[in-house]
Image (cartoon, rainbow, N blue to C red; front, side, top):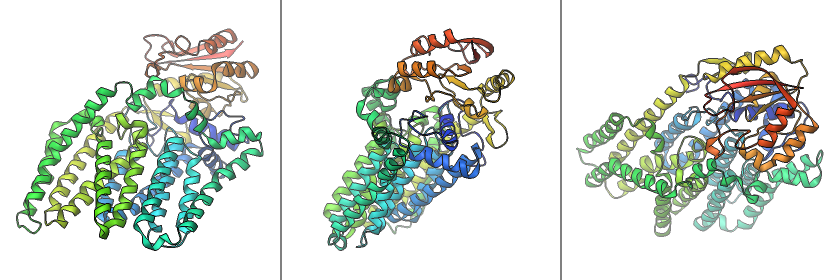
Length: 572
């Protein structure tokens, strides 16, 4: 997957440039939340900024680090799932994690993968959450408070990433601790020490972050920075934008529920016959291998022949339904089967974590877009349940569990093939090299106009000239290593709503950039199609008064009907 998708992971304009620009600024000595407006926790930009100081500020530094972090996540996930389901289900889940979530591009924009993510807070947070759950798994059956302490430290670090990931990690960790204390007599005597170690260690990362921020910031601003995205979440407002309502499925909840029901019935239609065959076949029957082979081949052939194309992206709608069903089933097993209570409780806690990760996309569940990270734990639950937990339950009752396992493997293979077809179609259009040396990557046709704009900027601007790119495209600041003298990075509807357009205009008036680049961006998905006419009117008017056009590349940007274009402007 690394070799096949090499260089195609980021998007040339959307999101990922922020993940390079912010740590580059920090590596130069700027201060987060003072010199850079940021609405997530400080852990990820601090980490990437430190990497830039140690190994040089380049895209290759981030790629190498993120590949290592993703390898760590795969190892942690395998270790956890092997304990919860066995070696084969953990292997199948690990392969699904790599193929579906790690590298690909399943939508029109890049950045929804673990190598060049749209938000490092998400990928770092998910990795820390898996680490916390693995530490609590190792604590089960032991009196030592070291494992709860490690889990608490990882959870505290997760707090410094993104609110939705921390909330899922907190619920999963709380479920793990509660269920372990209920199911494990050996640890009950030391529950106070364990909980004390967990709580104390979880407080260390936020307190340390506050102390570091307070060196350069007033204590109130340092506290808000430590809280990260929580003040924005609790204040609300951004979730009313059409983009987030659509992502959550709240734009058409009845339609999303109907899609979930329809795809749930498809799952039953494909896997139901294999489940019935497994139940009808004795475990040691001679026909079991033949039935298992049929169960392996037929669902895979049917799904492959269907060639659902883009519909594959909707096939994961039933993830919440499946996870809730697993929670109910495992809760019943834990309550009625003392002999398997420990492992069932740990499985149940992982399912709670997976369901909590889906909260942001509950009615629009998916493994693409935000789902590459938020839907991934639920997808792993599906894999280990169908290849491990349910076949194991069938075998306990003398039935042919391998029949269902074989069918599940066939369906998983077909699903991976369908998703990789979409990845191939998306990355095959990335043929334009943007950047040079250790910063080079592949882009789609927009990359040609970006390259022309960067060449034009180099001809007009001096080495110390400053630059702002609106409404989105801070990757151009990164590629040219030019600072935006204002604290703001993006100027899309969420940023204008969170930080306030008036405050942004004031910052531009106080520290006007030498050059401005306007990039065409259709933001209809937010409910405001174009910058300057549907939103950001005051900022656009200030730019028109202060700057004059120099050169245009492509079609006129930010005009109705424009496909793509870039406009270079200089200050009057």
